[in-house]
Length: 175
Image (cartoon, rainbow, N blue to C red):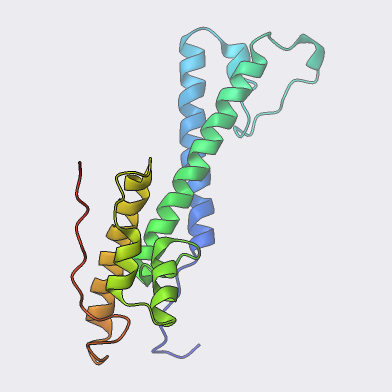
């Protein structure tokens, strides 16, 4: 690797480290709660603690399923949080187009095929007659503003009539 080449962040490794750290913490908290409630038998069964499960699976406490359900819900929350954090980190370090399939990339693709900011904004405008349109419209307009702002700052050499031209974005009127 060349000396002046910047180090690339390993988002996958960071994400898995976050999952391990957060899951260990939350399972430890669940274990403390179970012990404080007098359920040491259930606390001993928690996954991801490094403890050996008992060999006699016939005599598991009746609430084992519930405890495993809670543990897997915690795992799901930890994974979703790590994914959101890594997505935000990538976006902050690499820009709004870094994550495939999100607004930033879609808007860039539209700009690359020749749509102007005004044309894109007019299609994202709020239509009061469509139920649920405001949430998606608002997110799209926010992403469009970010995209145009980024395009302005990173490509000041482009012509004023190109796909990234600084055009006013109509504000969504609320009923």
